[in-house]
Image 1 (cartoon, one colour):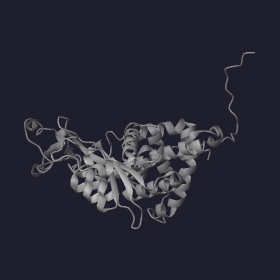
Image 2 (image 1 turned 180 degrees about the horizontal axis):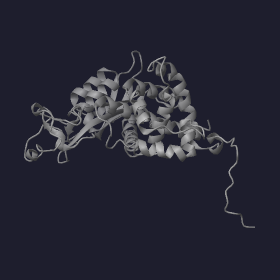
Image 3 (image 1 turned 60 degrees about the horizontal axis):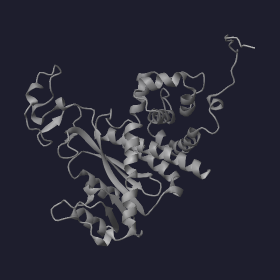
Image 4 (image 1 turned 90 degrees about the horizontal axis):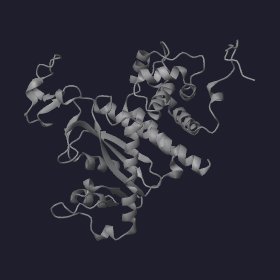
Length: 358
């Protein structure tokens, strides 16, 4: 018998979004971890708000909504709030009931700004990392950096002493043939961004450098950071991220040829770190890595494992939409990079827990 294409509204509904989400949905494990982390952060989040006044959007919901935008690659806040209005899975993940209204875009953006500081992102990242302790290696790591295109055009890159450009763009015609460097020029749109070439012959971009330290057992990120983009930024950031606690055993750190200079390799060895970095045999004077390192089987293993960090950067850029960041200023870009790194770890942990039957 054919069913009728008719709709009859119930007077009352007792269903919640949670009842509509399958028990084995992958996001259930992620939501559980996120709720654990946010409960631990609650005292810190409370210090961001006054004791009196109009209630804000709950910071826990703000952070879940930001995670939602990363997980599903939603490219704008307006689009995310639009989908949150009708998407049951999104409502469940953020923590909205069926009959709760979705926030106005301007209200959401204003409330979100309060959370855009590196301390909140780092606190969230470290607590997610704490949940990963059973899956982490404490001895073998990989370090690498990646280019993050800034939200600024080359036309904004003018001489520092000239001041801001007119809004009508009348001073943009003199840029052709002009030699521009980070010492003499600066972006008026994003003053923290730096003009950077990834390699000889490649196009220069206004960019930041994102850095990550990855443990090699399961490819989880253990440290992240964003810096300006001078030529030595990758090694400078690595020195800050690779600091074994006093009394620990020797650790290994893999890396590409950018980490092969003799001063960096020598400094790592003094820090009780064995550098398993790719040899740059074309450099004048040869590679700083000799048979003391290459004769060990562990070096070959590190060279294979280090490719995983590129997978994390690929996820962060494609899924997390960090190929060209939509925030301006190093502090905000660093916040986003760290938060997307935490989202990547949550996805990895969800899969690892499923494989382990946890």
